Image 1: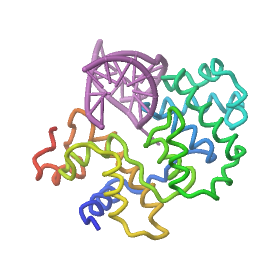
Image 2: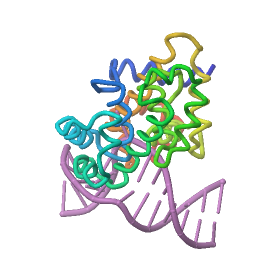
Image 3: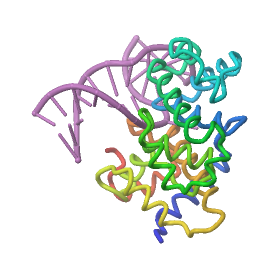
Image 4: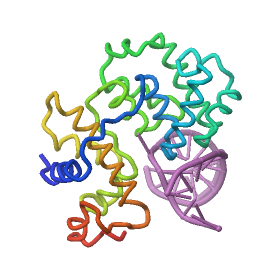
Length: 222
DNA sequence: AGCCAGGCCTGCC
DNA sequence: GGCAGGCATGGC
């Protein structure tokens, strides 16, 4: 068990409180959000999702039947809209073909199997796959993102950023029990919250709840 | 007014 | 197998 990691989690809880991610009205909406938010401000994603609802397109079949051209117009506010329209369609094609467009059908598959399947879909990388698993399917898996890697570097935990190593390290740091899924949900959301406020590309570490500990390692300004 | 956001793929080396 | 370059809107 990595006590360091647990301590970071506790500090973030104290600083920011519970986050209750993922904001959405349905599990499918969560999945759509994971794709639309790739390298994108959440505010812009909200606009795109609102448009999808307005056009009655926020369903597997809705997206499947719509042309890429039209879909891209609807999601325009979130940016990278041509690529993301394709990515949404890639996901729903897989989802309908293999699971009949029913999320409950995923319950027959292990987390590892689903993850491998998601990673085969063009446009879904590790973070998106893990976000779907954790927030849409409630699977016991941690989501690493750019903020996590940056924080761990500044905190002096890891040198070279590495998705899988960081993910495993964090997963190993919490006892396997029924709470862990919720800890992972909160922890990732808290890291994003920290990242947005303090742990940006340009160091803005003043008042950061973890500033003191990062400072000790002397790597805060990397 | 720029810089950048809850990534990922492709195409070079 | 690592890494620049491209994708694009809107928030701050």
